[in-house]
Length: 202
Image (cartoon, rainbow, N blue to C red; front, side, top):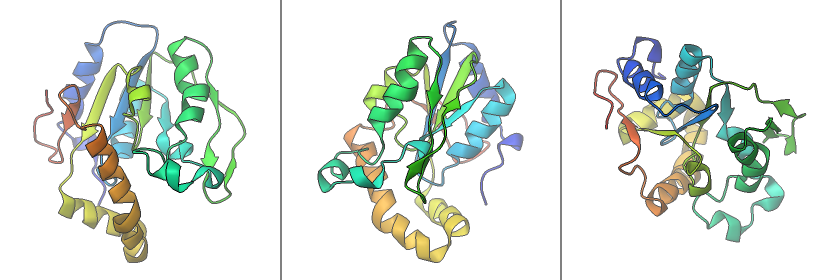
């Protein structure tokens, strides 16, 4: 079962942290953590509370033509970081309009251009959202914790036994290599625990 953040004691402290951020025309909050930890659910809850648009890292997976062994050997290299920076992060940081395309994995194609609503707070949610080039533009970084056993249970319910094998053989090792390479979570991350009654820190 995915976490229900509507009855989650962790939401209020996060909203307090966001309210305490230095005032800027645009704020970027990133949410990272292992697959199955509840990143999308937390992003949805914060979006509802803040009327904040969400950008999903899933929309910036690397197209098949770019998935070379050399590229995938780079921690976080399975994300199309160059396109994310060009279409979203750089114009967002410059106060310019943001128009981006979603990568459609099954079709190996891009969606029509999507304008990002201009809002005081925008949420960037998903694995690899704390890559250094992204992170230097983030105003708050949230990192979700999850027990490995709970992660396996959630992924089994979400994707089924066959795809869980692929997650364990491929996607989880890629995530772990990224976390290790960039020492995540580090002291500047706000840690969001698995237990809905546990304190958010720092």
